[in-house]
Image (cartoon, rainbow, N blue to C red; front, side):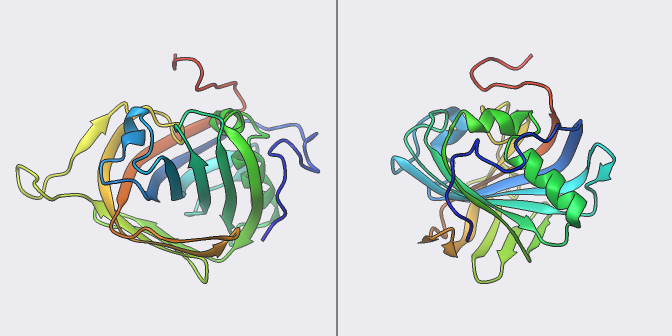
Length: 231
């Protein structure tokens, strides 16, 4: 996989960022107990987090570059301590269906060089493991949140419905303080599968643990910080 690097180090650091927007569905699969204390800014269940985070882009643009068509970004992450501390180590896997202009746009956005919420991530990051363009199958509907990266990631989540009253309803939390996406309705879920094999040197099987889903609509390059309340 890619070489480890400081998150601010890049050969295209001087690129002038364009105005951008991406909207779609985000979900994670992690090693916390179902319900995930990180949803409320508390420490992870085990004191550390290992997770697969997926952004499925339904529509978007970076300047004149369109980012529609279901392109996806998958993040392999580990951190120790609180979700809002500067502790993240992660690498990005990006859909290899993206053409060269889309690849540059997505890399600019998710590594924070184009501002917005991902730039705020850099304030929480101690190590960027790399960015790789790989084949993947990513899909999301009300029942299944699926991410498959051949040889690296096998993930499947969905709504957690045990003990739901009324039956078959879902548990949704509004305005949970998530640093991955802007606040909205978060659906509490569970991971049927969360298996990582060799992605950026990381390996785990955290199946049957936590998952959650939230729709996102993110923009840049306007400044953003998790150190201050949203306006």
